[in-house]
Image (cartoon, rainbow, N blue to C red):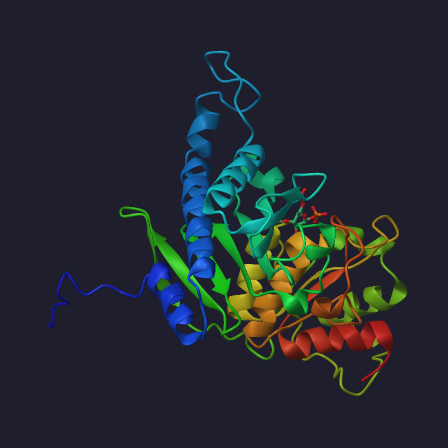
Length: 347
Ligand code: AHM
């Protein structure tokens, strides 16, 4: 049998980002350095997330540890790590975090804006379910002329220059796009390096699973309730709004973790649809446009998938506030199109 020499290793995240830089005319290395700093923050957060179960076992579950010392919650810890590491990078003019009320001005002359959810799905930590970090990078329009301000962050997602998420699951996977496809990297924990494991991810055009919190069914609009009936194969009770939405031969399977990164990652790899629509309680949906919906939409579109608020493309929405919520529907092209047909009645 052929034996692979020990020195032949795969492409690292660092090399991949460098290759992107060499392909971009006029690149200064700042963007590459920024992404390397984000990767450092992720590895620090990962090591703490990996110890969370043990910390729980040792009684570190609340605000204090066994010695009675104050222990920071994982989401607050992750937020601080990202803030500190991004500050040291010197490349961020403005930072917005789901954990901060206001955007933070960082470096007056820096080019980039980073928006992140430091630990999404953190209510799932106690049950050892996958959780994640999500981020988007934007470029300030006039870094030399103006001080960073909120308007630098309130930009439509189509202006994103890079987005990514990290899933702290059975392995730690970093999914990144710098606008040239969506690529997945898996952490080798022994050496602390991310290796390219999922090059050029393509979302299948149609999937076989749907991912939605069906506990909200009674709060959904009749159109969304009809979609949910259709996808479960109850088509005898449903008027399909167009011939495009054919009667289902096989109902879709239900998969819902309740952790966006875990649900989105499965949908990205296997296809299908993830939806957190508006309902009578959460009139604008639950998820945040800048920290969750936009980065996911960018990654899905770069992988050939789709992301809408049920009607319009997520990446076209002009944000009006930092913590704005939005209904989010993402996944395979055909599956998201069918959802849209149910909601709008248009083909
Ligand atoms: P969080 O900001 O409280 O962590 O909530 C975000 C999470 C997402 O990860 C997930 O998609 C969604 O909330 C699940 O919501 P629900 O429990 O209502 O189904």
